[in-house]
View 1 (tube, one colour):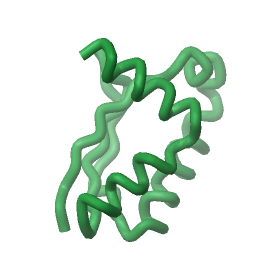
View 2: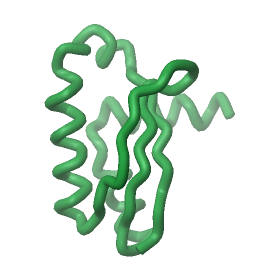
View 3: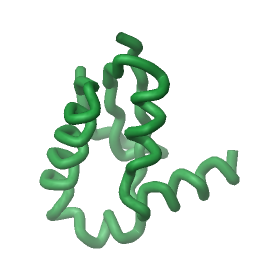
View 4: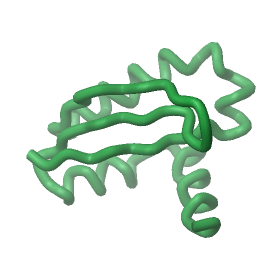
Length: 85
């Protein structure tokens, strides 16, 4: 299986509802596992990213499908970040 490093930042909505973060993280891990992946480690960080996860997926296609199925607020944040890079 291939490994992936996910760099994640909270959106404004995520910051406002930070108390719900543990449930959102657990939900994301379950969704990843339902697609055939495995979370190897998950870290809270300081700096430009709020979370870093190391995950496994059976293929690039499975990883891409999971990223594309992210909640709309996550997809919007990803598009904004890509434009800045």
